[in-house]
Image 1 (cartoon, rainbow, N blue to C red):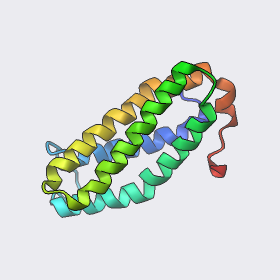
Image 2: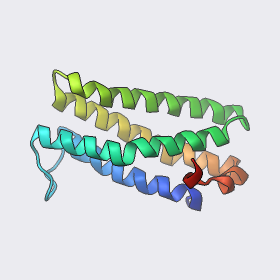
Image 3: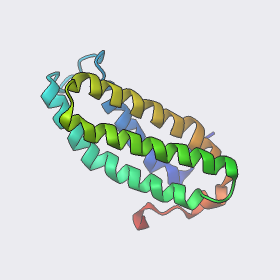
Image 4: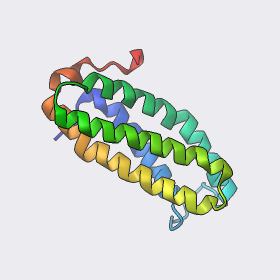
Length: 143
């Protein structure tokens, strides 16, 4: 199914975040122009989380609130996704005190990747299918 135009900005952000996930994994291939040192990776991740991830989660929270209350199945799915947002945010915050930053960045990257894939492959598809009128109401500039 083609992505609803109002969800396209989130999908573009997902694509950028998936790159970060690949870059942060312990088995990541070197990317030209991106440092391999742990501290540099951590600094890059902090920058992307502040610039992309925080506003992205705010947009999704707004979207999920608009979609709540129409279908019990969707409400359950949204609760799971919101729990994952909290878990991923907690993992990010915990990196400050991490005893093994490399391992914890890898775990965060894998969790975030699985979350994004669930949103793209399951949640967005279901929202488009079951709530087309709500999708038409989305306006992230007012969120």
